[in-house]
Image (cartoon, rainbow, N blue to C red; front, side):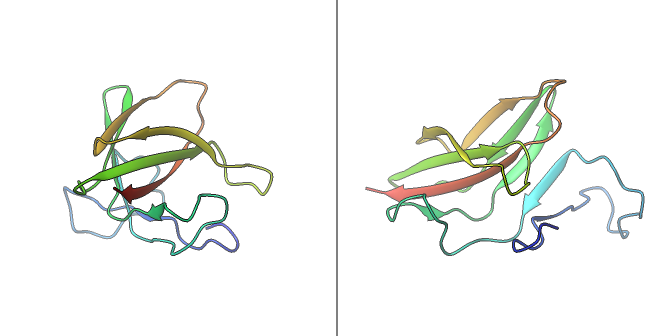
Length: 118
């Protein structure tokens, strides 16, 4: 939880429907379950994207999202959620997936995705 933002993700087990244990500290897949209707500094043409999925594939994070006809996607990243962190535009693409290499020096990374159509 981050003050003012609320819950960022639900961790869902694909193998079991049992409740997540209190000491659960490893996952290979997460799914974003919240969306924002407006974010400062992104631009009025860009809309937040829903149904983003992230999975670990080898030494890369695999991000995927629904395809949108005529859609252009923008991904922003931040490596922490403290107040002094700022979102950085990372990449624009027309694909509905992306691989992000995982490095030992990276303690965590957060993504936010936006789309616009022609």
